Image 1 (cartoon, helix red, strand yellow):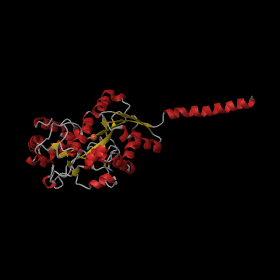
Image 2 (spheres, rainbow, N blue to C red):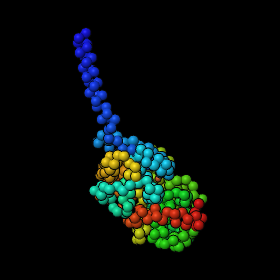
Image 3 (cartoon, rainbow, N blue to C red):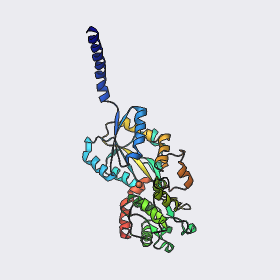
Image 4 (cartoon, helix red, strand yellow):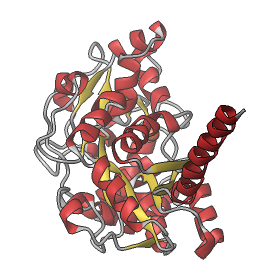
Length: 344
Ligand code: FE
């Protein structure tokens, strides 16, 4: 009995210790993130971060505009410390909506070229994607390809696949062209470019690459990581389609190929500032940067981080050095221009 009692006391004492630890556990470091990036493309990194730091990460994924609307309606009550989204246009929308506060961590953000972060310190790029031209090597003379403007040449009449103008990636591309060539020249280009469409825009970027593979068109414009996923797909049909298509890096003698970012910012009402900064630091660390290149066939946003084998096979190319902020600032003008040009 006594022994049992003593045992019980010990258990209770242990329980007491555990109980006294509980308030600490309840206040355990955590960080909350809203992400428009699919769970599979961010969760493995967040798990690693938690393992290394003991900081718990709560992830909510959704469509970019829906998450932004939620952030706005939650206001000061939002649990979100961080908002992660893709495309400079979406980041610009978040800045304009006033949901970010300055990152105020230059030692972290300065690792990224100025071009790929907010000039007001509201967000920093995490990964890069390029938007080149894809072509059917048997049907296209690459010597006739040049910059994006060359896609409007009569030579490509009814031969181009591209998705609709309500897609942010296309809006950002046109926003860049407005900056490089002016509104008038870009609009004239867009009208002739639309004339070259092989079909009314339909589907996503992968569908444009498949359009080239299946002979619906001879040229397409799409983001590189879709091509990477197709080439490395478990689905034999996707692999076979991708293998019929090649990349052409446009504007190598001009401004360079259009690139865009995924990026992250700290919310205006963040409660876990230090944890939020530590997570950004982690996402910009060399292993995380490499992970993006391996898992999603994206380019590291930091210079000097090695590329995945797939990216290396596509070769080096000259990137457009336009600031991502300009893509956001020109977004509305780009949308209006595409509408006027009849780009559906
Ligand atoms: Fe995408």
